[in-house]
Image: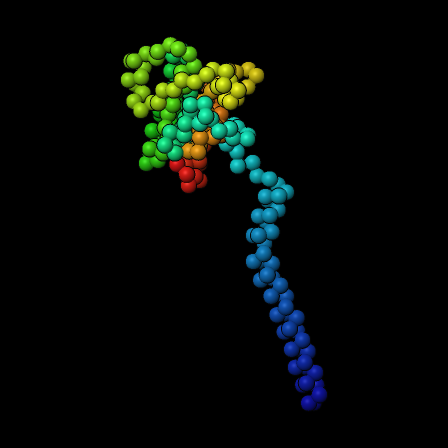
Length: 195
């Protein structure tokens, strides 16, 4: 009888050990599952949610030497256009003003600039509507080399974004959607420790 009890208790101990190991394995799998799922999602499925509206200029180009400085370490939304400023130019100036205003408390981190691409003096009435807009002049050929456009567009069709270090890093498409520009700018301001 004593041998039977010892065999039973040894069998119970073995079963408890096996059950304990299965429970430990289950706990480890539950803890490791989120990590495994995240690696699988990132490296295999590749989520598409990491896109931006503006096109990144790669590699970023330092444009401070062209007379387009980083404006005291701030992000710069930049428009290139002749001094006469056609309706498209006026629309882009309006858009960069509004997108900057929507940055709320971060709006002081964003500057607006207009590179006047000829010798024509801008309309004073237009400038009065855009208080704080920085005017610059630079060589048109140098602009064309540094500020990328598409085969179907000109430099003056785009809005460009310069980082606080003076690097041209993003180009928004022709007839850009201001609400989508705002989202890109908000992401950059949130992520940036500079400017």
